[in-house]
Amino acid sequence: MGDLDDVVAVVARAGSGTPLTSLERGKGYAVAESGCYVIIGVYLTRSRPLAEYELALDSIRAAVGRLAPKTIFILGDFNAKHQSWGNAITDVRGRAVEDWALQSNLSILNQGSVQTCVRARGGSIIDLSFATHAAARRVVGWRVLEEVETLSDHLYIRFELSPSPSANPVQGPSRLPRWALTKLDAEQAEERAIIECWTYPADLGNLEAQAEHMRKSLKRICDAAMPRAKRPPPHTSVHWWTEELAELRRAVRRIS
Image (cartoon, rainbow, N blue to C red; front, side, top):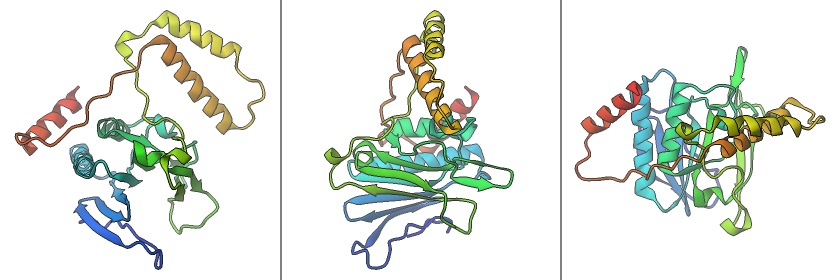
């Protein structure tokens, strides 16, 4: 199953026994159903202006809303960097994807800090896996296949699904964490940071283990110093919503 721009494909192996059914096609995304699962393949190029990029995210979010409460996976190259899924920096598209995931009530499946796109000038984590919360609880062994040749600068990502949600607890954060920065208690943050320094292990080993420990330490500091931000309610289709209103909303977000 492919998208309208011929840049995305959702493929089932021959003889898998479960045929694919095309549900929807858009510019940069394709929606297919296989048995009890819905797969949304995504490829959002960096050449898209930010307004068009956000419009594509809105279209995908609307598709997720129409298909709920089915078991949905959103997988692909988002060309977006964010520290929440392992990048050293956060860019404007990464913030847009974070907001989109929160508004869509999705879980991020990416684990660790292994780069998914490796180029001569450096790598990054831009190939992302999202799922509805019920779907995320079925995921087992999400990983980047570093030793498999892909004939591309992007690496394969693989995971398995358990037969039932109860057989596998959600791995990693079920939602991307956000805090109410306006309620920051600087004194509490400083005190917790001092405690984290006192308890820093001396034998963490490799750089990846150190980065993971730092991520958890920062999370504990934030939790001690300010409350979590409330999640915005998921957007639902209403009869008075128009594309003009959507564009005005995106313009306000860019200004703010």
